[in-house]
Image 1 (cartoon, chains in turn green, blue):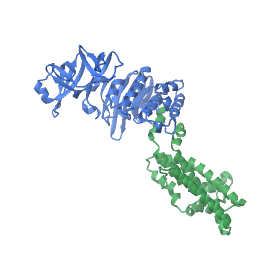
Image 2 (cartoon, each protein chain N blue to C red):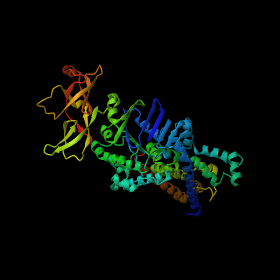
Image 3 (cartoon, rainbow over the protein chains, first blue to last red):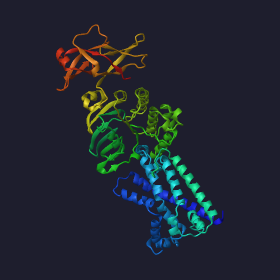
Length: 225
Length: 361
């Protein structure tokens, strides 16, 4: 395998890993809120966080492009903060992936938190646990299935993204060229051998991931079916 | 000491309860489903919002007028709910250790019960490495009780902790609860449907109806101060009398008791381990009345009594008769027809034929 393909794989892994970590930190509180609240705005927030699941990636990509533009408020703010643009950079890819993969983090977490036994939380309270202790010792361990599912699905989904990356990330080797783009490139240039290698690799990876998720969740809902 | 004056509202249900309980005894909370028993415990623990005051010993847990409300996690209490919840991802040992860590974090002084003592007392050695899902109902209750006591609480709230366990196992568990109270007297509120538990553990009872206190006081006084309506559906009306154990006849397997100057026998398969005065339960429907001493009867227990009073509701075919035998009172339920035929009225001397009585020890 040539170094361009290897670097595409490496960037893909980095992107998926960073996205998964950030999305867990953002997604867990949102999922918790969605699982517990009866607030009026719940449906709106739920719809917003699920939107990326139904929208064509080009729609998201188009709006990201507008938002990330160095002359737009968000884009210029980022330039002012970091000196780099959001478009055509790894940061931009991460930000876009966080939005794009959001439902895959939030839905399984929400289901896990909904299934959490309220009495366990009360028991922890009565025993004297504060919020942080309860999160670490009761909530996270009890929701471990949902959490692993959410992490794996988010990672896999980010690995598989194409349209959004194409629209905002461009195709800069070693910077923003991920595996899915590299496959596209290879096919365009009739380099079928490399295309096979990457496409086959992605196919096997995705298949193994899903087998893992479904066997891990045998008998429990994962929130995506 | 526990003193509370609470008011809370959830949906259509309103709880308004006031009581003062001594620090060294258990109080039974009795009442029908929906009378507010669990709501009361939840309000005291702070799991449900309530207004009013709660004082435990010298500490104020709630004082709405001065906006004091100690959060649940800072109230030193042990709470075992109807379906005791152990943390499923932790072993039994870890469940106890977790409670121990939290307890030491909560109190500045090292006022915790030693884990090894609790493990011995509740006989948990063999369970320590097991996960909660592999435990039976009785084992789960034992672990939950031990865990609730780790922090050496100032107040114990038990919401039918034995309700998920079958009768025989219950009998095995009661001694653990009695042990708790013997060793360290502390206020305990005990919600239960089971009068065996009430009689053995509690000196006082608080009867609730529709979120209000209907009666409170000593168990034996309270039980008859209330009508059947306020007793749980599954509880038959009964009385407790105190009798002195006299002797045991091994050949006939009968234990003999003394009430005033009369005797009573109760079949027992083995030599009883108690001595002195013991509580005996007599169900109202197991008592028949005769105006002269019956002869040639299979009933062993005939007590000479005086009628204290008769009580009946117009529509009911039954009459409840209060009887006095020496210093002990109990009741009989007979038909109104029998009452008229025998000409029963207050102060008449009669014989109570007791078909069966059970020991509460």
